[in-house]
Image (cartoon, rainbow, N blue to C red):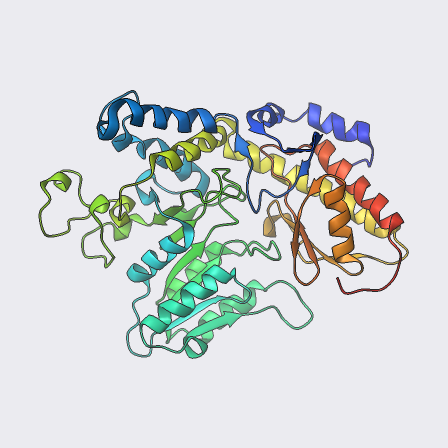
Length: 432
């Protein structure tokens, strides 16, 4: 597609956008009376208009019925989870009974490790990507220590080649092959939080399982962002948070996927009352009998208010449709790259090195810009200009225009603001 770097062209793209009405269904930030350009859906998504209403409905039911709200009212809490699994199944490419809404991301990863990391003899190694998000690193480190293993010996990290920022799929697959007799688990991010690289999850899954290992993915930056087909890819398990692209609020309830072949009582797990078979749950008997679905991994009574916040966002995803969201994401992101390339080319020397892959199949909403000069100064100036993006040490600015609520005009405004900041910035070399 041939783009034009003009404001009228950006507005024409917005006029032609079939999802333009969804911008009004999200509360856009305004600070000190000034609307902000918000490109941080990769960190915390914005609040849907209906979120407050849905949470208030839960509060009203609590006030009216007390504990009987689990069974009474227009939306009994016992059935609330059922409203969430179908939209989530569409988002992650799963069967509805393979999805469960529970806990938060790292808690779910620990629980899934109990089921899928089963070290036996020499087969005890875990493969992950280098520079995984710290909570994943800490989760893996402490979990393997629980088994008495040394993380330095047990965790195998695949890193980019020297001089490169992203990890080549061929290197991941070769590392799996090299360690195929000692691998118990491959656990990677579906999309790396720092670079924005999308990993080839189908290829990694095939290679890991052919090596005799289980495979799972942390989809914190992937769910609601890129196309996922967990069931068809035959992935063993996955987990994600819902406060980023899924717009369900800070500390929002997380989610997990467990392939249906593991939905039987023999699958090891940590158990809790809420995961027990519903037919016998209230008999309060000894002997855990898990639900024959991903819900059999639940532990405790769920929080209906967090369910309500999640529902408000998932309804928007259902209404918009994942196909239309992915089509807009690609167009919006290609437009951003076009404008940033033009901006970079206008500089006396390049000031941005893009560490996110250019291939649109290897990236989602996020663009990570390695600033070659004045990085922190530029980031601070963007904030003063009403642009909310993200800073990652030592010198990376991350931004993620989300197709549900960001506009083409905002992308054009951002690059023009950035150009003005560069013109005002003194050309004194600096690392950050």
